[in-house]
Image (tube, rainbow, N blue to C red; front, top):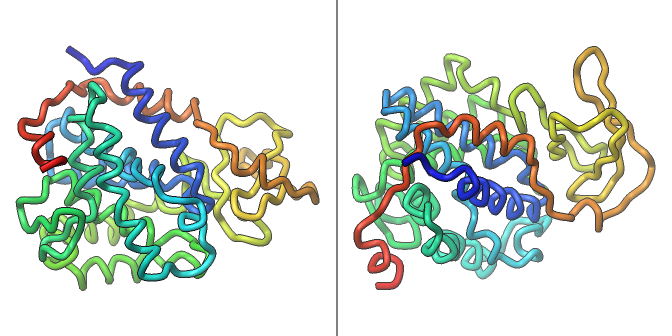
Length: 291
């Protein structure tokens, strides 16, 4: 029986509402999902499994709903104490999902995407092949997108620098085979249509103050007002020669900028791709979560 469209939509919507709380992660979930799908396809996995991995990439940060805004949107590097708060998000996400009818599709990605082959990851210090495949994939694609995206304290890295870091950490932080495959995808240009985009064909848009952190829904009508999620700066959407452009309005509205909204157009397009997903049951899940 195909996974219910409405149940899948609840998963996508939850993830998008969580992403909306973080001023600097516009488009992150979509990019991680697409990178993960490419890597799954490179492994020649069955289509249903590739779709499940892409869905896990979209849901992986669900637990950040439990991270305070002051930590999530801190403009500087995190302190050790704040980093410990961030490290709770995989378990929080798994706890949120445990009673969802489709939790088996994504819970491995949510709970284990920060586990590392050398056993120094979190929350359960898994190592090697004890880390589920989807989590090993999302661990790479999540880190790559974090490195190549702009943050309050630094600009996004160039593609090659991020790929070199993944290469250097192969076998310790990242699964060696998967890291090699991902680096090869990057060096042959197969990530370029995703890098720096928030949807297919839609580049991230730049705030004059904060950089390229504004994710504009592709179906936004001409003249729509949108705000930078970090500073609240207002912009009006226009389309020039078929491309999106933003014109500053001179107004700031941080309240409107931080209002969580789901990109329903993107969700509908993602749902249309999920033709072969099947509900998936994981024996022993409750024991793993709650000991």
